[in-house]
Length: 152
Image 1 (cartoon, one colour):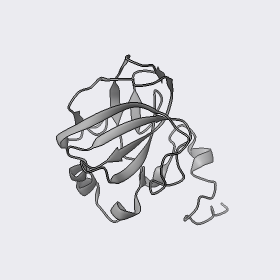
Image 2: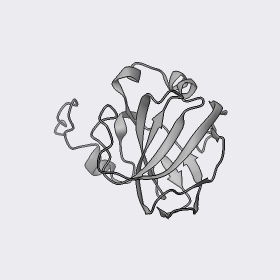
Image 3: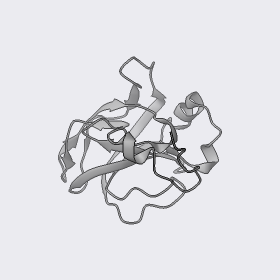
Image 4: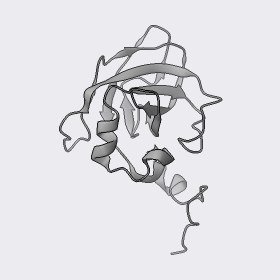
């Protein structure tokens, strides 16, 4: 998860509470470098609205997000790249990796299409914006604001 600067010092429980009544918007590829940057080259594929409270009790399989509706209908066609979570008033909380594989937001579908249901099947908070399918690459290359990797 890439957390917006405003929420950088918040605990996991505080982040979960902040999302009550907020949204989780799925976008096509081209995730911004940080959650503080606006989304420019990605199309909205679907939007989920968090219930209040936004999360139930976590399990061994991950978090238990609670949405007003799951599945949500796709609004355009594309391949999932990331998801952006916002508060009920639209303040950006953070960005998550999203897709059908081992991502923070696991989806039942590979891609979206207008009017087709999209279902979230898993949700995990991963620290520092890692991409779980390629930690050997994404967690070892320099990123803005992070120190260079150390030699073994």
